[in-house]
Image (cartoon, rainbow, N blue to C red; front, side):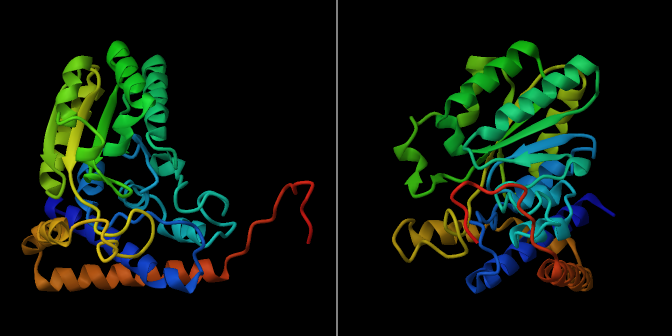
Length: 312
């Protein structure tokens, strides 16, 4: 399979899975808060295509795309969203806490910037044990305002750790635009203070993201230390949930429409034939239907403990 076809398929799969989640969410079968990745698929697809299964990713709460792109089980993910015992976190973690160690998904975190220290710790272990693995730390522009961001960059640079820092700059933290939260200095340019090579790429161009990630991963694997990739992208839906927040006045409609015109999937649509597109969509829909059916009949988790105030 060509790289282009692989990237298109990965992005379309993410999109279709999340569109299904958004469609059924009002039915309340899924009680976990969901931060949907629709619009940002090019970043996870491009980065993960440059990684091996042995490499690890520590992502944030907008987690579905990264989990799927890295090879996490869709069945286990949907089971987790439904709160079932067969979920990837035993039904206790929900949408924001996905894990598939075999696939290299070392857990996603609801804490802003929380996954950065996990990736740096994993990279330190790899260095100590002499493993030729790469750790990827995924975070949004909001994490730049957190203390661990600075600490992790400083430590990774000092120890020349095999980490690739990936910033998904989607311009918004909940309802606050980037320009109201940070000084007008590009995030990737701030890496000069840490001596870390950095690059700004169009996050909606999966091929461009892949090229940058391949260079950064190779650099880390050869012992040359960390890199940072800032990916310009945009989430289409509200910060948390399946709805469009433009109608509420939180974001300008023209901004959203401008980014929709730059859809990462639409951008690569011409690289597959109509027949290939239909085939991919049919296969993904079968997989989604199987995962939903499995989740609906899966058992609920049994609590191993009860707080003192618990009453049946």
